[in-house]
Image 1 (cartoon, helix red, strand yellow):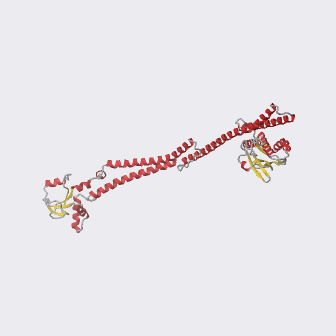
Image 2: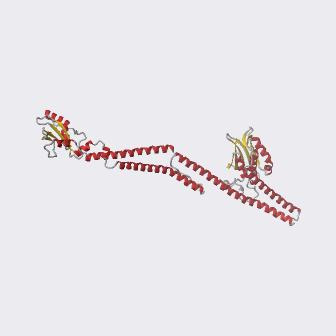
Image 3: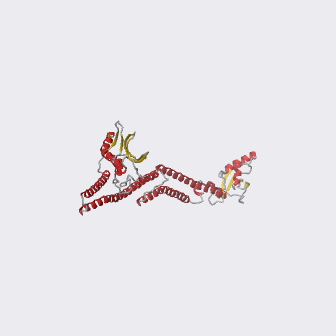
Length: 467
């Protein structure tokens, strides 16, 4: 911006100097035009009679024409040769009056060259010719007055000097106005774009983006505005998504809690009303009540865990630890459930020590949720693989199974709360919170949880933890 304004100021000074030059040329041309049209006398014409007396002597000697005398005649003047009695005995040039004799008083009056005189007089002694005594030079007085004026700039102007001053001032003011308007417009245009963009942002139109073609500073402001708009738009979208997820979470939680609680109420009412006549039916009703209460308790526990991870008061214990033995311990804790479900387990952990940055409680919960998810939705005899793979920048834990798999249409939402692989929300599967908790815990540790499939393994969950 500074460079641009500096260049603009230099350009303004250039045009200002150009205007001064134009006014000067106007005045100069006006003076020259006046001289050409009104000034007849040659500016180099001599007006002293003795010069012409010398020229006449030269003319008599070599009989050559005199340039000075010719210049005088071209200018409208002439020469008179007077004798001792002041009578005109000869003339050179076109005589414009009828005087043939001068008295002393007349001659002296003419030589005074007053402003109201008709002719300009100049006399010089002359003795080259026998009867001649004087050389009298006569020029129309108005022509000599112009020739003798030394202040041409003032007296020869067609207009008053104030006229030219006003023209110059007017041009300068016009230049200042045009320059100011031009600079103001260059600054106002990007500012107007910025103002319009801010107004649209205030009105909630966060998709507004600016395209500014101006100085570097305005372009940087426009880029910063666009970056800010991106952040606000993404934040607003995330906030809107969070609000929608919260509402959906409440609705889904109400639905999932209502079903088992309704069952508990129904079986409990049957027992209260004495409809469990025999011991076997009573035990079956009590078993239903117990299983549904466990399901409700697990759902509430998962919900509390999901909220706990997102709480700002939750403190994680992320450190760089050995992870191979940790994976073995987690699998040992879940082996009983896997054996009960009659799954074929493959645990592949390298013998060498492998280190990664993780929170043991969070990572344990991630692995357990993935295994629980596999146990809940797959039939007996399913092969379950848990493998630890060390890489250069991170460590990978894969939990894969050869079960029924997850429908492709659910892949984009499978990590959302209350989304289950069986699609119908009335099954005996999990609470629909396990995968949401697993991804949230993984992201809290700076990692990623990815769903894919590979060969006969229809479901492959990949946990990436930085090392």
